[in-house]
Image (cartoon, rainbow, N blue to C red; front, side, top):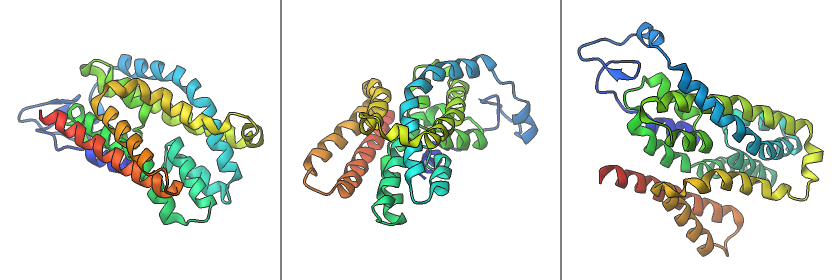
Length: 260
């Protein structure tokens, strides 16, 4: 859900028609023009190549999510959520809430708030995507998650969009594959002594290097302080409050940085 919100945040009306991501004064944009625009394959390949080793880091996490899917009350619906939620931490949180009988409204709220950090990512990406077609911006928002965003931030601006698509596209195919393997090997995965730590370890390995980005650091810092202050609350409400305050703080920090 929150990735569609992120897509909406990333969408901006272009200053004029574009060809290959560049404004064309007085020109017209058609579907044929967009389709015919040359794509720098080197940036796409570079993005995919950068993402490939990160899939190994995602492997244990994907197996854990797949095991949770297999153990859920409705494995088919839980498996389809691999694409609709498209976020391991949010997916696990939603399955946990549903497993405790809290209902789909509470589960949806938890999943949205776990993924609310994507709003800060989308805000940071917006300047690079203003001249892109609406179709490409929506696709970028649907595939938005931590690793492609982090990789693209370090790439040169001229090829950043295609680099992002290379990385995000490979993960969009690779992540469901890892979850599928986890579904098939569910009992073996849940028997691992460190199974409960895999989610935090994977997300931390991706997010921690990005703490030098001010919006990310602000979001993590505010969420951490909020989690400490709400330690006495049940896990569900505490997660909602920490996720909401951290995500909002990250978005505000990103917008403040752009306006300064």
